[in-house]
Image (cartoon, rainbow, N blue to C red):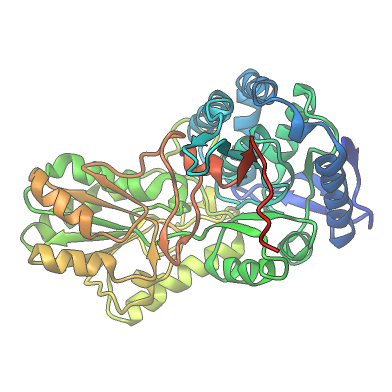
Length: 489
């Protein structure tokens, strides 16, 4: 099996150490690829290339229009190779091929959105209070950007970072999760084909405690963008303080899905399933906390339970599969322990709550879609991001109680409200401390709208104009058109 390489300074290279890693299919634990396993040396080499390309290369000074053409070309190539990319993503993550195809469409859209946005902000002229002067504000690239992406949506999350960084004239080093690097490798083939100059975009493969740590600590990295868990985010934040680099952190969520008795229950129930069980619940915005009005609690739980029992687990390449495996044995153990602890703390299993017994699923990292009732906010399975196919159900009697429960979390990424009373919905939205709140829907996103969280769900925003601005510095330029002496001294 050929070793897939890293991309540094415009060249495909092995790890300096010569180390490699086997990539495992979570459906059956088969080895699907062998990749270079970089470390600190590879990070240093990539940072040096990106620094040189930014400080002495042409990319930061290339017009926004020309950079946009190249970013648009990347979108063209993604669309051309969409099926290959989707298959790689499903092999890597275990998700269904249909989900991966949706992702590829979204990814191409992200590149197109930022290509379109690139030359639309020409700066700002300020009315100067000083006679005979010009005052203007311009946007410039931040510099060298370190980018660290998660394993759950490898290429989608990469697109949120790559596209705005490139189109604004930055140089970058991106590190995918060491267990899901395959679509990153492929996208760099497309980046090279599109004509991105050498040193501008660099791919280093390897674990966070080596490759990621160097990116976070290094004095020549001007910005670090990370999507992942809270504890790693805190470590990166501390490391970034060494040279006061800019940070953009998306650290997950424990997202409430509030359902009032006057909601359209048929739609709310259907969307409650969609909110959690895509990609086996391994979604930072998954609506894993259902908070339901007590008068409809039993009806809703019974309906959800019957639907959940019918969810078909299996190989993501099987057209009949509705939910694939979790990403790894380690993660499967983590989800399992959260459910076990929830039961110990008083939760009741309405459905699921264990690994499947089907013979054909025994080699994969599968866990049954699960609903836990009788849940309260003091339970770890309610408070912590288990990141699996597990719904917890809490009850409320009043709107005030519903909002108190919804906000009882260290997270603040997203949430949903289901009601036909629009005034009630707007009152709830105003009270919910989250970066995104959906009314009568869940998990909708698109490139035009910002994405990010309140509280410990992170710092900064991705997507939208704000996602572009994360990769820009703001400079005020003052020009005196008639300089004169002051004779103060």
